[in-house]
Image (cartoon, rainbow, N blue to C red; front, side, top):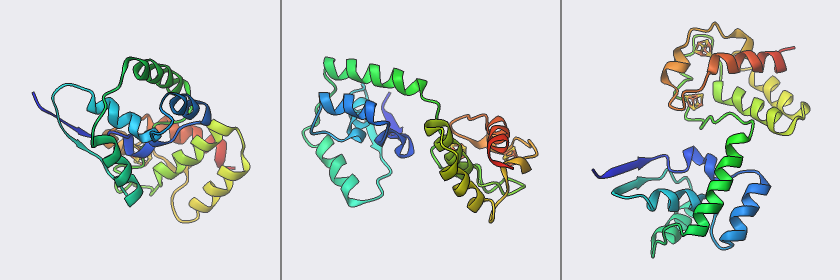
Length: 178
Ligand code: SF4
Ligand code: SF4
């Protein structure tokens, strides 16, 4: 069956990662972008008919063209490196929100959910309160606080990443709502 792939770089999340993991990929393929790993992974699968990539600038388009003109599937060593990287990524504490914002319009208390998650991710990844707290304080001047969540579940029903948003809002409230 032909396969059409959406979100090959997970809304851009696979185009950037922590320096240690980037270094592993660059050591193996010094001339390739980090995003190209995701494209080469999906492009190496059987029966792929189309890969829909949400490019947002010319640089990304050039990078995609470089990857797919004279396409080279992942070799065995690439697959080993990618396996190590994905295992390490799975252990990172960040929440895998792609900022698609499908959850936002229906929130009855107008929480800017992906932005709250972004602040929480910064706190979780770097353990530093000042910068994400400043971002959060500015955010909630124009939208709902994480603590305003009434657990209606609308957001969880539409989240394509199946994130436990109600629990995430509770954690964000504990960490940011003073
Ligand atoms: S569960 Fe909370 S965050 Fe989600 S839509 Fe309802 S009020 Fe908004
Ligand atoms: S729907 Fe899910 S992935 Fe999309 S912005 Fe909301 S929380 Fe993030």
